[in-house]
Image (cartoon, rainbow, N blue to C red; front, top):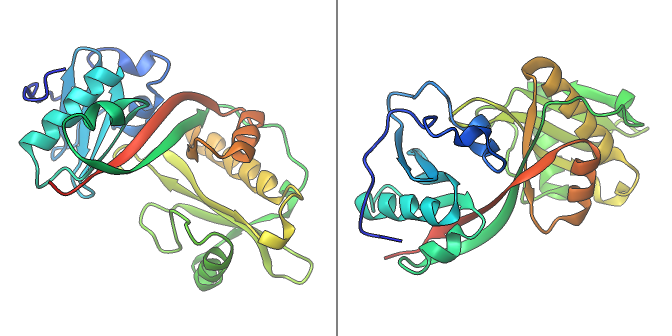
Length: 253
């Protein structure tokens, strides 16, 4: 792998047909097919990459060696702009041969075009609005302090929740969107720690999936690779798991 070469910029990420191959759903759903005017993107044999400039994040899809080459090229050409990356599993090891990296996390990008079977408890799900933001934030702080998306975050189209008999929230979740493409992304699903194991999270996840599929034709989500309960749930709900990804931060150089 040549770490010093940098493929020319391409105006179109969808020239290799990668989006139709297993393991490329992140490209198919994560990158807008019409190229945004300010998007920097590159392609090489067997991989494509694009930069989310607001985060300094390079997204790459394809074969690990080719994807790592694009990440390295972007980091070397734009050292002040590239701070982190996501790529196919194995990209981190290849990039680490040339650049120091930190905070490596294995993820799975999952998606489904199908409505799941109706799950018991879905009838308890209610939509939540702006007046519930403080309540949602307090719930997330207590029961899911590492939540990825909070009330008021940009890109959120819907919050939903389940209430207990006393009217208090016992579960919540959101539909957000992937930054570049606007594709529906499920986020911040949380359950009251004292009531886990009762199917509340499954009911909410099923409801949000159905909502997204009916309005957008599909739903996507990110899953930590070592989260076995989530793995079982998402598989049961019909989410595909072809995209095994890794994310990492490029450490100070």
